Length: 409
Image 1 (cartoon, rainbow, N blue to C red):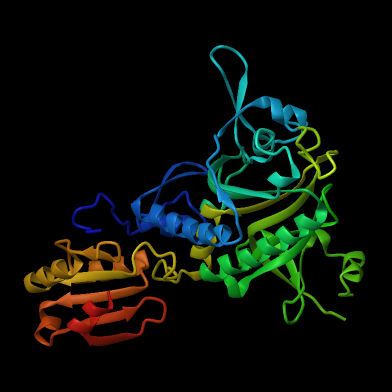
Image 2: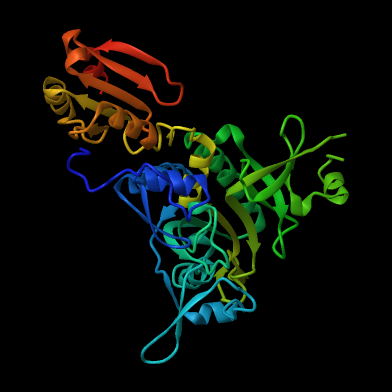
């Protein structure tokens, strides 16, 4: 991307109506645009980050045999009525719309019902199981008070994976595979060291579920952890009975804030039973499919990464999800000419600032936009046949030969 050719503009000041650091920086740096409270557009740079996060998730889920599909956001009320979740008193996050011909449709807050209903057309025998199906889908939730920037919104991008198994034993094996995949995902996203699988309430489905929480000062959740963080519990299940159940009653726990970045649930027959999702076993007997649900809020994770890694100068992206690896600051006629020469053929790696702007302005924008590596190419550096390379995270700067830099692309 050439900054001289894009409509993206950076802002010197944070929007007055945004309190969350992630939204302030992402708007200032030209990654997102605010439509209204809790609703954001993702501009070209923001979209590239989302796509990079999605690709990491996709690769790890595909590796355990999951299949990607794309479902509709518009929801048929009938499956939701069958599970008793269409009523706003039972599920208070609905956005619903009236059809001109009469009747209602919903805007999906989640997809257990429609996918379970769909699978009735594809699962009929034990030979059809297990199935792992996932999607990246825009969800809609009627949050009473949208806050925390892109970490809590009314419209957001979600990865939801669902498993369909012949029995609980098979489900447990899949559950364990998803746990391993999630650990790899958070590691690749750059937050693995401070993201933990925590015990949470299993509700009506199971004794416990698991949430993935990233330790974060501005996180909305409270978690408790022991010294080596081998046991981490959500506040809702932090009590003597649970500690005894987990064999964690010497242990001294500390309290901290955290942000949820994923969850995994054992659903059992909660949706398959009322929707009639059954299969014939080897003896021909009809049995109900055993289900699990596994979510990651993609746009939410992006906001958490910003909150976790940004500094006083701006965004700091992990290389795996940065929109571009290099931010080249071109200065002077010869410097700009050389930068354009390097840029051609490497457009996917380089954000090129070839604007007619002051050096200080370009440097501040490079820090604000947060690419992993800043490269200055100017008339002065060309005289020494070098470029100035700075690591955005550490601030370490060094001079390297132009030929060596080009060879690294």
